[in-house]
Amino acid sequence: MELLLGVFSAFGLSASAGVNAYIPLLVVGAIAHYLPNTFQLNEPWSLLANAWILILLCVLVIIETLADKFPAVNHINDLIQTFIRPAAGAIAFAASAKVITDVNPLIALACGLLIAGGVHVTKSAVIRPMVSATTAGAGNTPVSIAEDVTATAVSILSIFVPIVMGVILIMFTIIFLWWWSRRKQQTA
Image (cartoon, rainbow, N blue to C red; front, side, top):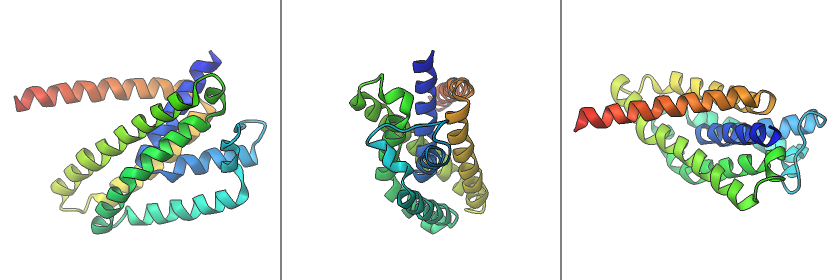
């Protein structure tokens, strides 16, 4: 059961990194730093709990959060984040203390990379262009705020209540697959 909860936690953290690369890393590092009895990171991931790394992550969260609020800058940010978010997802997945001890680190990194990359592509290639097109760019800021709040909530829930995150992730996957198949049927 512990392995399954660790996997749910890792999947939630990497999915969150697909939305905002630095929020899950900051959440993991801050919880490991301030609540070490609750969440411990194994080496080399324990570096995320270092005070200087936490400060750096805070700065990066602020930069990405602000860059994502402006329509023109948002698209450039998403292009840059195409490489960063999957890498952050891989780190978030692998850093999950309960998973890395039971799963091969390369598999953990690959899973995190694929999950965060998939979420990022869905966000930047499907959702954001649709929001920009339907609202003439006016909807980007509220959607970005909702994304940041969601990434933070998913990261926190992934650590403290991983079973809930597992159920939510499974439900979203089913809904997304249903939506995708309907979309393909409508265009055919």
